[in-house]
Length: 341
Image (tube, rainbow, N blue to C red; front, top):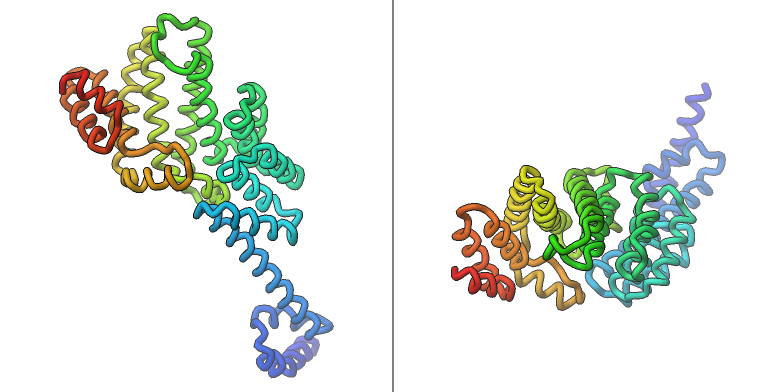
């Protein structure tokens, strides 16, 4: 009898629902409510509110992707005014302040608020490490403390791993004074630190490539920070990392490892070339966003240099330098001349 009564009341309500153009899903939920009309009004208002919230956030995110920084920060501030507890909103504000406005202290404030809202959110910790290390000139040890907090929370997160790889890659040069030239003149302890840093960078970039396309690590905010395709950029950086490891292993007579990483560098550069954007696309983005990006010319030159360290591969090296030279790479032009290609 009870079931029949519910059905009867629902039947009475249906004409009202139809006339009011109520969402059938909302109507179905509200059939069991004591105040059907009140429930419908409440649910419809909440749906509209959520739709508006999502629209404001998506609008801000799209502005950021397009490089429209003023519109992006205005939309983000509007969104945060209505949603002060949104960790994603504060992370987006931080990204805009970092990449478009160069307001790094404000970015750190945004990041800290996001962490306060959800201290188990791994990405802001990594982002904090990146700002502190690259933009504020912070020490590697303190940056790594922030970075490690993100890695502890989500050790396989490709976006956290990418930032970790980027910092450790740069640190590999920094401990040696900025380059890996003349290794025989570098202090032994510094070379050991550099080797470890590049090895860690390699591991993190490999994790990035392994997980970047998995749905469970989907992160539109982090993805919006990659000016170029993340897979292309990471693959090229893995080529760079392995190439630097080649010289460091060679310096300590680890010949087998040196040979292996040189071959891996060749493999990653070749893969990067196969999925690269055009040189024109990269140069336009560099001009529009004032970024220094990895272009096809860079990768061709680097792959040519790898070939030049391999037996009987000078012809292939010259071929790559010729391509890079046509794309405007001055280093490739010098190599082409110096090696008498």
